[in-house]
Image (tube, rainbow, N blue to C red; front, side, top):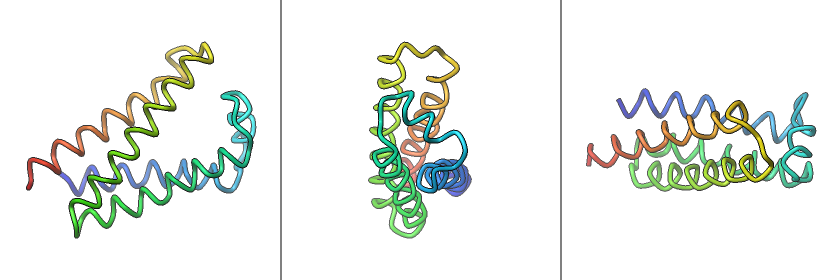
Length: 114
């Protein structure tokens, strides 16, 4: 189960992080919508990419994966709060909530496997 969740999370965060880092279509507008500069948004993407590396390393050293997942939970919590403060509705807040739920599931499974 941990391997499945790891692959799922790595795929999602790698795609999203890379899109932010390279400034893919729509990302500058999303950055502006939540009040971030393009540079800040690219840094968030870089953090997401680094966290995917941490999740992958967690397959060998579980504490690294747990640390990366905790960092991503904090990042997604911040994303949800940012969208809420901007007055966004469920359509914008749900992705952060779903990713947070997946990360918490990963944490429970990873901790139970120890």
